[in-house]
Length: 617
Image 1 (cartoon, rainbow, N blue to C red):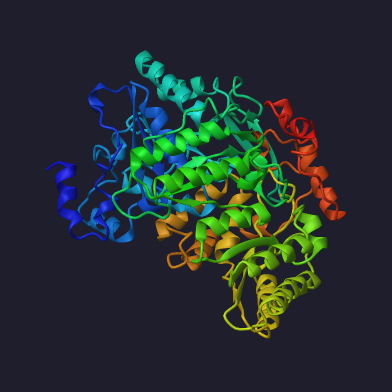
Image 2 (cartoon, rainbow, N blue to C red; image 1 turned 90 degrees about the horizontal axis):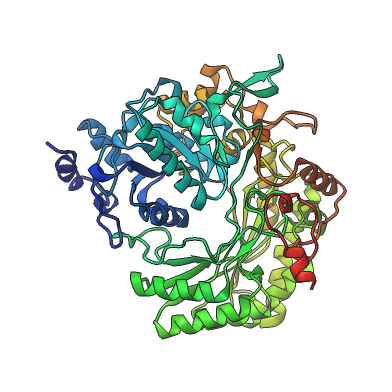
């Protein structure tokens, strides 16, 4: 019986069978027998989450334009479906052809968050593929990975054959062309990996060997293959206007997390928040022009039938043509009876005008992200929003009729004190007073204060700082809870720290963590980013059984002279800049937005970066 027929028998017993059937509008149909490189784009989470990821649509579109390549999609089955598949000995499969993933040439995982790492291993196991790259011979596909978490590839280094660092639009077609040439040559598996290092942005872990001091600190990562690069420079798409962008995106058959047309308006960020990895690794800022964005948006809406359009970036309001762009997109949306979603807006007068038009009388909640409760700590993290900005925005929102305000803060930031926590309480109290002053009412107005736990990340100015322990986090959380419950109309959200702790371990981990991952998955860990599925006790068991102390990675302060596992990766931002920014943080000094003034991060040595010059003119 074919795999497809076996699957048909299981679908009636699975929750949401639409996750597994494929055949959506704008999916590709090719003859696998006529293809040189079969590439599986693997998202290590469920269909609903993976299909909401814009990067999947971009890569799917680009690779399938190549005649010699067939890009198919692979997702993690939900637990109910996985249990059925294992019971019936049904391997992990692609959506397009229902082929076992073992039949692919390259299986490429996107690394969007550290807590998806266990799903990668579980998917390999479900596909009948050994965990360790050293145990896979030529009968298995090459296992690749890319995405933001690839900027510290070491925790997965014994599992992944090669990593792709940087923008995938150029690097993946080069990889597939190299695979075509290698396949024709008939050479062994190692020859393909050796050919890959000629491509900018490729890291092949087997060509490097780490060594350690007696105390466990990393001593060095040395090449064991002379032609391997000393450091791997990320690959950068410099001109987004010329970059391929899908206009016939796949339209899911079931509801997904973000079920809408999406246009990326620019890539990168100039704000320089010192805790933010994305703001560092996605430099430099590259914009799509207003006309290009409008053209893509109109075509996507026409081709997909979506009833919502979203423009996407790390800080949408920072687009140089944001006001005319939004006004013209609103006109396009009105003409097509489509709603417009605008994440990451600054709450200034223009934004409120736009929100008024978009939401009208049905106002949903407004979200502010001050991140820290005092100006001192916002100076530390380089968050340029001031108390005056917060209260001015709140006043405007209340005057226009908003009654639900969400405030996001981060606990455990470097140099944080309980006075900074008092600042969070003070902001919430002041907002309730502003509402009373404007409306004369206390009821029907709600503030939600949400706090998350700070996770130090690689390639950021805060990469050297320890994470707070669980006891310290809990003390801070309960301190805020006690203070905020005394303010009428304020709700408080906080969560356990188990997932943040694991995230901190793997965000700055080294190659030894590969064995912990393998052990944890064999014990039953998976879907760790889902609170209801996280098995923290099994993770602690995995650390004990492998003899590795997770506190070594999460709670240890690093010094500037230490070799860090991710030093092998060149993000384009220099370590000297990160050190300078961390020193400024300790001195409670801000750096300017680099749209206004170049602050010498080093990216202009790797790619065209004229943001400061352009905005100074």
